[in-house]
Length: 262
Ligand SMILES: NC(=O)c1ccc[n+]([C@@H]2O[C@H](COP(=O)([O-])OP(=O)(O)OC[C@H]3O[C@@H](n4cnc5c(N)ncnc54)[C@H](OP(=O)(O)O)[C@@H]3O)[C@@H](O)[C@H]2O)c1
View (cartoon, rainbow, N blue to C red):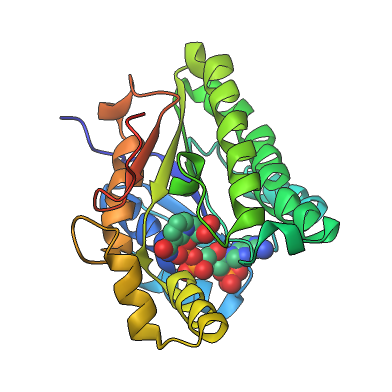
């Protein structure tokens, strides 16, 4: 099985912690040179120093807020200036939770910008290089909510569905150029995002975080939370030569929680 990414360049967004950071680590372990992107310069600096590195691998970081797509576009011009990036992990922070009937227009607008418009900006910047290389891997980290909307995550459910439709459409347009577009759907994964959701649900329900966690785990056949590295392993596989004929799909990495057949 061809898993070697030596000589390939990857851009991993939301890479300062959690699933993004774990994905960057996996890709570097497979030999790719990795560019990290997130808002926190300090966390990015720390992360870039601990990435696996062999001869010929050059890792770097850019601090950018994906909410501001004009700034993202400017940063991407610098990012692609030296060499093409053949791999994109399109990942960012999740929108705040809350019932959809209480969401304001501004909540939808910012989530749409940070998730869908940022993705479009990233793809438009990287596609020419992918096409020139004849090799492209775009992996969007979304959520199992694209298969089964999750109660209490109204804005997120809505915007994630838009991202999934965007990705499917894109996958059909670029496949003939050797570029694949796939989605990884994390289930409950032990990261800062999950900690935040546990704390918010504990506050709003008057239960302890442990009780909220046990309630969540009751719906997971594996009866445990996932680890960021377990999601990252699937992200990284989709970026390899071995995954060349996997295109336009959404893979849940959720311990079996999603009950939908497709
Ligand atoms: N963990 C779960 O259980 C779970 C389940 C389903 C779906 N997901 C989704 O999977 C994705 C990754 O989850 P995670 O658990 O790894 O999240 P996380 O721990 O909150 O990490 C999010 C990453 O995105 C970066 N980020 C956030 N806002 C950003 C912005 N405006 N511009 C640039 N970077 C930004 C953060 O870094 P900075 O703060 O430095 O910018 C961080 O590196 C999220 O969309 C999340 O909703 C997670």
